[in-house]
Image (cartoon, rainbow, N blue to C red; front, side):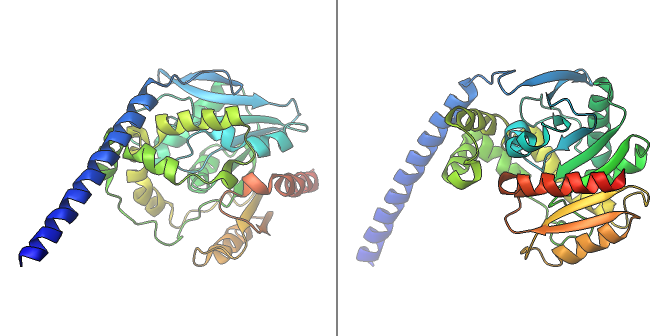
Length: 311
């Protein structure tokens, strides 16, 4: 018994030391992140006033047609995340990348992250830029927000393009997340530690060293922020509200989806969505959820052909 107690005490002491070290590391990283200045303008962005707050946008290219790019949930820096796709689109299109509140250089907000609020904020941004006709293109959760957006602003949107975009009825979207735990982790700095430990050089191989450093600062700013957690907390209700919704039947839609996705029924769900409109097409590509990191050239080639066929 004494031996067992001695071993237990040693184990407890070791765990305590590890916890102290981790908290110390987290504290140092968190302090460093909080002091890191987030420069504006270096990524070619500008600000639009929406609800009295700054919404960050990037405008590239001078084509006759405008593409409005929207990110997937929790993307710390949409402008940098979409860089390969923007580079491919910019020679022929005007590309407007919007960083919603809580993303990129944009301000935070305490307004509920419901689909309705997000849609209205995005539209207010587009309207402020004087854009009245555009192609809506988005990654992941944008597929859910776009259903409401295109229904309300069908007269403005000429087509929707989804990049492994979310669809009504996809499995496991009724998950309720431990928001309080994540908020404490952010305050302690653990979210930043986990983000650094989970880093994968392949996912940001398209960025140069300065851009990678910029991305790190924006991850520290936005990852598990209150706005991020607000949207996370609304995911289940936003997905539930999308059940049964479809795109306007006369709206052309082009969907890119991961081939052999691990998400159950992923291909079938997108096939159904493409078939629900007069002019819909699904293109399956090999890769992971962030297809625009590795398949931007193929995406733009298919997109250009699709748009040419509409004219």
